[in-house]
Length: 160
Image 1 (cartoon, rainbow, N blue to C red):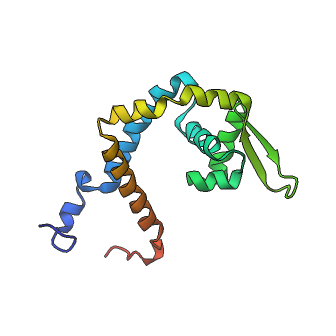
Image 2 (image 1 turned 180 degrees about the vertical axis):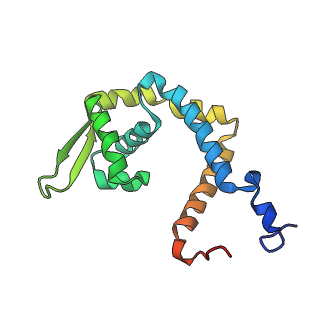
Image 3 (image 1 turned 135 degrees about the vertical axis):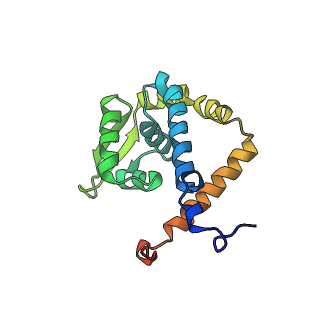
């Protein structure tokens, strides 16, 4: 059985042995499937993710939306601006703290939710996996992300 200690360094440098590349390829494939599923809604995949958070949690500070999506404000702000221009989201400054901006779904955004109800089933079907397999994979990926979040990049030894 191969282990980290018994695998040759040369084998680790093969593209098809890179977990990051497998995740990258799966992400690109998912984005293509989502592009088709979201076309009728007029949303991009990142916009859909913002809407999922707002549909689930209601009005939130932009900072909290970013935490849910693991996005910084520089990436999130343009998404919210486009969603606001489309009439799906309303942003406003907090009365308590003018530096804080909240976002909420508008009536049109709530109507869009009804149109989006079938998207998750279509995506799940496209995977060809059972619901149990999807849940298991999601749990593994969440655990992987949590472990990687705990890694201090400065603790990784430089090559050589």
